[in-house]
Image (cartoon, rainbow, N blue to C red; front, side, top):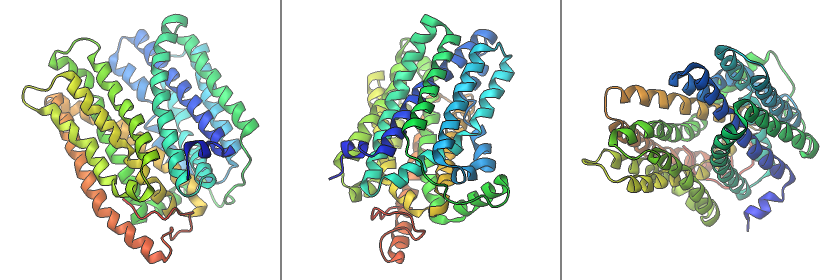
Length: 419
């Protein structure tokens, strides 16, 4: 029986798990410190918000023109370079008194590389863990990511208050440097999947086009992109919602913390206690579980904030739907382009989660935040219906392969679900 302990015995996964968790801590610290420094320098909430999210949208460009690098450079070297680049950005931000525009441009430039080394990391995990071990590995990574973000947010506030924003940035750089050294010394080397043929930008465009034209891969991408994006848009309105409802100061923080708590619980319960076939069958229901509680925000009179926080914990629990999709996504990919495919997946997640808060904010200018939150919940419910329909397509595809495995040659777990 596969367990979290057995997954952590794999040398490759253990190193990638530890270094990525450390990197998330360091990155959260850097993002918060930069946002606070920008606000202190400009007194502009808009610029502070831009500093917080400046690393999202450039990833779309990075995946478009550099994504093929994930399959053309030795993964260990690529991952080390990614962490060193993050460390260098933090050092420059801490040591050099840059104008705000230059600081934001520097962070955006570094974000171009994120899809490349994230794609290499995820491809290595897909190669190292087979069967249900892969899903449990992703579950464990999801729990660690949520906890690291919560801890990073708390640590950032303490660090900025005690040692100052620039010293906090140096601390973030140290975290990335440790992750780079840990990777270089402990991660087993792996070979390049295929040699360079033609320009990187052209190869990246071709690879992305091949992935998006594949109907099953496209559906799997969309079902992993859209529900988190809609919920992120709803999260972005918690502060104005709490203010409009007249809740006490600090309630917005409790509402924002509720979803990560639910995410941790969902990953543990669904990843550890449910068998793979049941996880896959529950995907549409878990997506619906993300959207349905958002509707209570628009109820006449409005529930009390503890009830709303409990509803958001349920929303977070629903994020575990991804555990029923990940094996199907891995199995649907061409073996020679996994790194680029995983980079495209993470890029779409970041881009969608960067755009939806802006869209939600614009909608909230002309209607109540509570109503916008409910509309985003309804949009999530629609994706649940789409996921249910798409499952039939993936079942037919795996049946046509004659073995229940991917027709592209990826390692299979007997998955019968797709989106």
